[in-house]
Structures are given as structure tokens and as C-alpha cells.
Image (cartoon, rainbow, N blue to C red; front, side, top):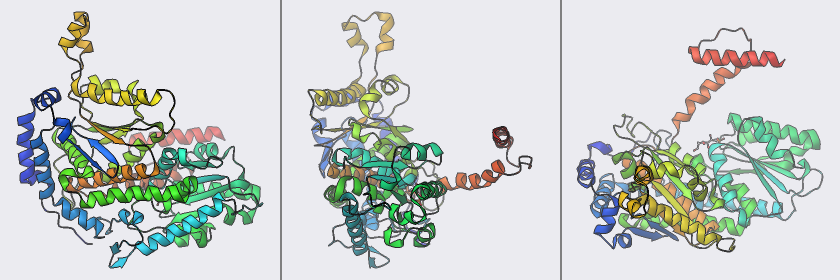
Length: 548
Ligand code: G6Q
């Protein structure tokens, strides 16, 4: 296994000690004070790049905090680590893999090497095939078994093979083929398959079986159900016209009955949660067409270039990542919110939840020692204005601090009366209210009865980042996703962890394989789990018996 020398863990670095001391020194300074003290704070605490504007002035930081965080990033050799990623070094040591999702959005002239071999020609060969296939589907040239064109596309996949496609489809719906229907089946719960297909005509339906390994239990179970659904109505020979695969596993794809000619490949240097711009994005391409898909890739690429070439102090993903480490590890915020002020981004929080938590939910550093600091926080969110009428209460007045990203667009996709003005007024107002709150003095001036004053005080000092772009386009979506990908990498580098493996999801899968036959086999067979698991299994066995 290739190991990467990443040096000392965070807590043994000089920079860490300095930040701890600094944290104590600035603790009394809240955001009201910091803004009062420096009327130009917003002017120097923002950065722009790849079409995004990033206002980070409403974080609990001073200029000094930022300098110390940047020093720490240098001490953790962040610039070297960035170069290692772009150079195809095996920076995922526990799986002995390069991490080269940046090659997926390369231009044809770029060179990205893995084990000395330039992977860019392969990336473009797959992309070209995807584009040719999408033309045939969208133009109605590809016919189903009965001669009907394909009008329904169902992506079957889970985790990284589902969340990106769903999120991108929702985000780019405005740009999608409105005469086609796109559905996504991920859950093993049969309801998922039933609801996704109940009103579809099999003769017009294409299934994309998206699975890097082509062995994932949920996906393969759903894929077999889909195959039966097609065979049942269209006959044995229909599978070839109604199924394509996105995978790295040709043998399993063939064994399933899909011609490898209709398989779109990717590579082990693409992690599932970093794969939405690989062939896993086939449903996105079918939905938005090649021009928009290319623009999406360009957006990713622009942010990649920004990340690779911009000095740390002006580098958006680096700044965001450092602030996440500051808020989470140094100031102890256990969760982080992301609140897009755009309905099309309704699945972005779920997508980012996997990206951030599967990447940085790690308890050992790269050399296998237990870390003695907190790593990735719980990441969660919802579209903003809906959240304002529910859980924002806790963010304003709860006892826990929840740093948040508020994402908005300067121009609406559907200009309608003053809707967009109200939407954006709400975004800005929330950031202001969270930062500066409402004081006792304000409430007295307003004549609020004294008994109500404590209930109505908002203490403020709640940190937010505001991320703005011109308009939600495929390009913007690409830059936004790459921004978060590289922020995650920045955080993982400071924490000295492997952001690209996911061993934690393995144990539950293994146990499920053990429990499944215990549920369905001899109902009297003895059970050897803990007393709780035994009792739950027994309860389910009894329910199955009563169903007979
Ligand atoms: C992502 C993870 C995981 C993976 C799914 C699906 O980084 O590896 O979410 O994407 O388990 O795996 P397959 O694509 O192999 O079915």
C-alpha cells in the first residue's frame, strides 16, 4: 500500500496551539463588536472565483484568525496535497487509489496520469459514447422492443450512484427535456420501485443500472425487479433495448443480460460520491442534453482551476474549508447547515450530506491513530425559506451554534412579480438576524412588555457564509459542487484523514447479510445476537408467520 507522508496530526502542530490560544483571546468579541470595530470588514472578508461570490465576513473570526488558519493549512502542506491529488498520486491510501474526479471534467488537451498513464483520452471516449447515446434517445432514434421511442428514464442506483443524479436532475429541471420523464429508484423498500414505475409504459422506458461494483444489494435487487417488470410485459428479448449499465464491472453487467456495448464505464479512481460528472451522470445528460452537460463540466473545471491555482488566502474552497474546521473543531459546532434559497436545489443538502459526512466522518488519521479532535460535523439542510418557518427558530435562539451556508442567485429563472426580491430579502435578512440578533435595548425601545423581553431576545453571533451566483445554470451547479468537493478535501487535509474511503458503511451491510436468512429461514432457529437484536428478529418472524 502506498502511504502518504502527511506529517503530524492537527493537535500536535504549532499552528493548532496558536489557534487554541487565539480562540481564548477572541472569545469575548462577538459579530456585533467585530463589525462595529471595522466598518470595512465585509470588503476584505469576501472572495470571488469561477462565478461564485463568497461572503465569509459573518464568521466568528478576526483577520488574525484567518492568518493563523492559513498558517495551519501551510503547516499541513495543503498546497502539496492539492498537487498530489491533481497529479494522480494515491492519496486514498486505505484503498490504494488515486482520487482523480478532476479528470472527469478535463478538457481534451489536459493530461491527468494514474500510474503513468494519461486517463483523459479514456474519459473523453466514454463521454463521447454517452453523448452519442443521448442523441439517439432524445431524438427518438433508439427504439424499445415494440418500436416505441424511449420517453421514460429510470436510474437505478444508490448512494453515490443515486444522490448526484437525483440532485442534478432536480437542480437542472429548468433545462431538461420536458417531454421525457425521469425517475430514480434507490431504496430497497419496494415502495420506491412501485411508485417510480406505476404510471410508466414499459415499452417507452429505459432503465439505467448505475453501480460502480454492480454487486450492491439494493441496486441489484431493484435491477432484477425492473428486469422482471420489462420481461413480463415485453418478453424475454426486451432487456437489451430497455437496459443500459453504468459500471466498472463488465463481467457482472454481461451476466445480468446487458450487452457491454451498452455499458458506460468509469474507473476505480472515481469515488461514488465524486462521480456525478462521470458516466453516473448519464441520466443528467439524457435530461439536459449535451450542450448543458458540457457546460456543467466546464463549471466544475473552472472551480478546479481556481482551487489549483489561486493563492490560499483568495481560494474559495480553501477559505470555506478552513472556516468549517474553525467552527467545527476549534469552536465546537457539532452540526453545519446548508440552506439554498432556490427550490431547484432542494436535493442539494442531501447530496452534500453524503459528500461531507461520508468523506470526513472519520475517527483515525491517515496513519491509523485515533484523532484527539473532532472531525466532520453533522451536515444537514433544506431550502431556506421553508426552513425559516420551522427549524430556523433553533438556529436563532437555541443553545447550540449552527454555522450555516446560505446560497442564493441574483437573477431568477422564473421572473414572477416580486417573488425573487422577497426570496433574496429573506436570505439577506436571515444572515443579518443570525449575526446581530435583537438586543434587550431594542426590545425596550419597541415597548415590549418586560416579561416577554427574555423570550424575544436573539443573542446573535450565529455565523453564516453567504454564497451568491448570478443565476442557477448548469455551469453554476458545476462550480458549486466542485467548491464543496474541494472544501471537503481541504478539511480532510487539515484533519489528516482519508476523505476518500468509507469503511464505516461496511459493518451494517455485513450484519444485514447475516440477519436476512434469520428472518426468512426456520422461525425457531436459535439467535445469537444481543438481546435487543434477538427480540427484534423474533418480532419480525412472528409477523411473517401471521402473514401466511
Ligand atoms: C460513495 C460510496 C457509496 C456508493 C454506493 C453505491 O462514495 O462508495 O455511496 O456510491 O454504495 O455503490 P455502487 O455504485 O457500487 O453500487
